[in-house]
Length: 369
Image (cartoon, rainbow, N blue to C red; front, side, top):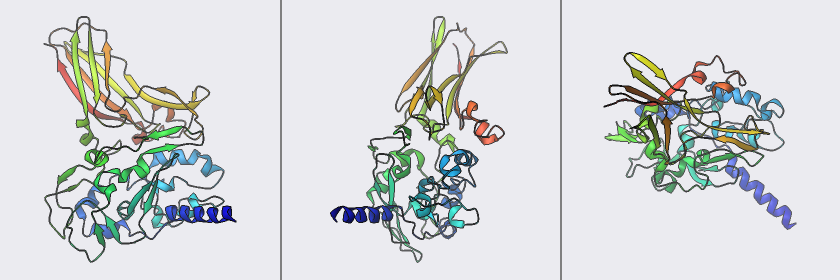
């Protein structure tokens, strides 16, 4: 009897964590927050669904949850306002994205993020606990004017310290207990760590109801968009030696340079002398997961096969065997691919320009004196 009672309580609690409430559509926010809405529209929060992100769709198309079970557990973080979220996430139920359902195309909506009340920490992944008050939103603006559309609060500690992001951006383990993707597994984020880099203060009013000089940027700089805003957290350094030279990449952020297992970074270096350019083999920074010594999709992997990714607060030094002469120009470019070139064909992305593109994160040219 006691076991049955505890099981009932557990199921009820789990339902409260994952149940979908009615969320205001993004269009409602736009009338009062036009600047923020415009920033948000180009982000991967807005475009997180399989209908807007071809890379995410390519992975989901091959995932056994889709091909064998008819479920979309990615919805927990990719379409958290979906009307059938419980069916997508629950045991013994089926639920997949529907392009004709507006709650499936909203992505990670304004209302959803601003209703995150607390974070439920878990071993496999964290879970956002969402407020049941449909039009009560959390934020950081103190003494906000009363709105006829919603109430607001600046007392939520997770918004004040930037930890509101770690419900989805902390870690994700697969069934083999392999940490597929992680920013900070211990959840020990520094104060305002996430938002200080990915939601910095920029000029412009937060709303047209009350004029403010600045607001938190809702363009969420990341691997897909507004990469230039993150370049200041990467430093490139050059040192000339006898018979060789060094290039250092200093990652000043609190997490690895790239996090997603499909990503790959390259350091491209060339020397220009008398109009001729000598290119070196790109230095690759990558984290490869797989099984039996071979790369596999995340749901198959049970180990890390290779990890040369630049870690948090790490300075990686690469040495090049070449004697430099006065006047030589050393061109240094640090960039990345959203999908490793070798994985493009496996996921049917070999013709997708976004997946194939080499994105430049930082460039410098050094003239030898």
